[in-house]
Length: 113
Length: 114
Image 1: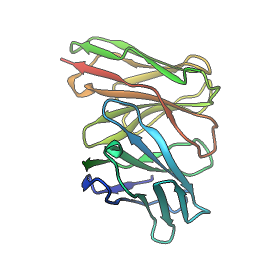
Image 2: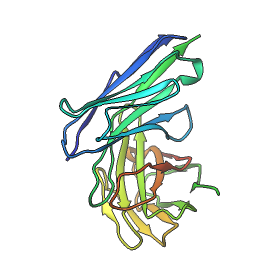
Image 3: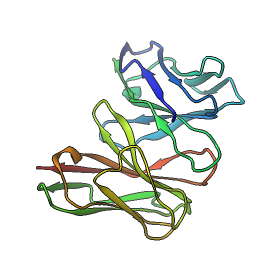
């Protein structure tokens, strides 16, 4: 089955800095890569996703890049703000049959004012 | 439109007790899922239902059973709770079976087994 590795497990930055979280996956057939943000005590919510026919996608201060050859994808957050502090999860899945995502173990991002 | 709802929000059980966690979605989604979240372990899939009338095991199904009551509702049952089942449980749904798509999560149930 699919295996998703996520690094780092904890990331501490100063407000205004950039943050990068990286994930690798094992199944070359995976073609959908979402990122979820989970604030303390809340539910995970989708913040951005990318499909395998696209190399990069941006939405304001966040972006995701995908390297299919190397089987890794990354979340980039620019100009970080204290409200970006949360746990971020990456996931990978493939179409066909049931949609079963495999999640990374999460990255705790702390943005210091 | 409430999205995905879960009950209860909190529960404390004694070892050996049973309980059912309820989940409902009002988005007409085909697929529904139960996850558990433990510190440092991410989200681990317990069971899922690709469509009404079907259920399948996920990564960590032992000690749990599920029922897809209808398209809206998907319940998770612990027949004989154990301390190892202390966790936060999330129900989720996604629009389409057989296609990659976003997961919508419920607010979670925090379960403690003493």
